[in-house]
Image (tube, rainbow, N blue to C red; front, side, top):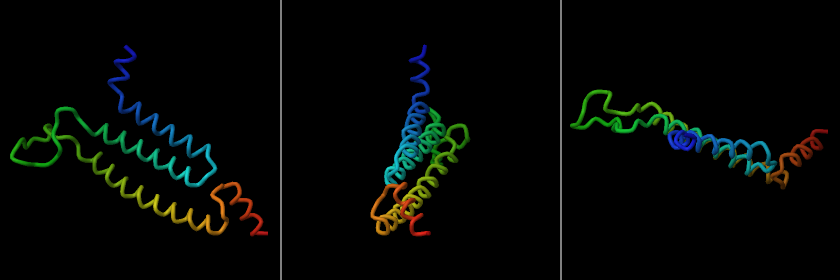
Length: 125
């Protein structure tokens, strides 16, 4: 019974596990690059979840050809569009975070957030 339920909801379980891995990486590590990687893993989990929820077995991609014209023959295109938009935004945010990380490293010669905070406190006094 449990294995049948797990197999039926495998995509959701994988998405939750990925999100948990990304969240613990984001919370537990002090290195900025590891935090960025954790955030990207969380993004991937959300996109995987949205894409798996938008798929309906037995239906076609929402591209009109000489086939069926009724809406029931196609999957919903909104989750796919949200995933694509989210990926574009995620890549842009990741590029910005990495650029700021390079600037922080050049200034403080470390990627540890605690050390950067201490150096910034010393500079402020």
